[in-house]
Length: 289
Image 1 (cartoon, rainbow, N blue to C red):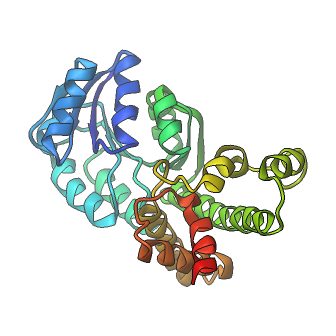
Image 2 (image 1 turned 135 degrees about the horizontal axis):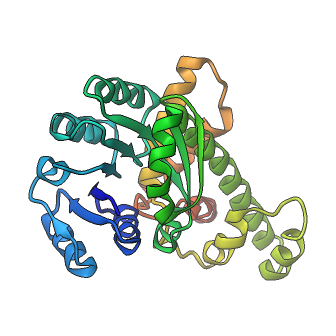
């Protein structure tokens, strides 16, 4: 059993921290909205701290699942001076590789381990303990931290040094953007052609067109149901990070850049909190214009 602190109890962090507690770890949580931390503590017989600095005191592992670079940088500045030497900071936030390297250096100065460890699998993956974790950091630190992450994961991979986890998550989001747009266009085309979507998916999902998005989202996409899953606002944040990195490393991402603008149209339709599969809504909306 390890002493853990979990900072950030959104749709991902709340169940992830719950899996840690269920695995027998002693977990203290913190969230900007104190009511959510209290709710988690009641549900999991854990502890809620009034401040992030208090949550990390004495912890062997500190895990973060926050919003964006500024949030992570702000909280890290408060907690790193209060973490004990030999502890490990695991950042599950999807953030920039530049920030990951910055945090690694700050932790190393204080003899604290650091792993950048963004996740994939969405809310359902977090709730079911089936996340895929992409890690960057030093091999010995990763080996020490991996058993902790197993509480909510189905696959944990050390990709490379500091920042490699974040770079891999960018690859993940780049790939998803293209797949969701392709699926949206395919389903829209089928509808316009008067085809039975269930029969179409039943046929093509057995071949090369198959994808996680097709398997898990086609029905809700056809029904126009987007009140679930990973929000468009967050996807645009992730794509912004990827496109910024591409400008630095001179990668060409024409499809990702285009899909990012399509998501901007979804936001303009009031769909900022809709699931990322809502790309199909802008195609249907175009029919009405």
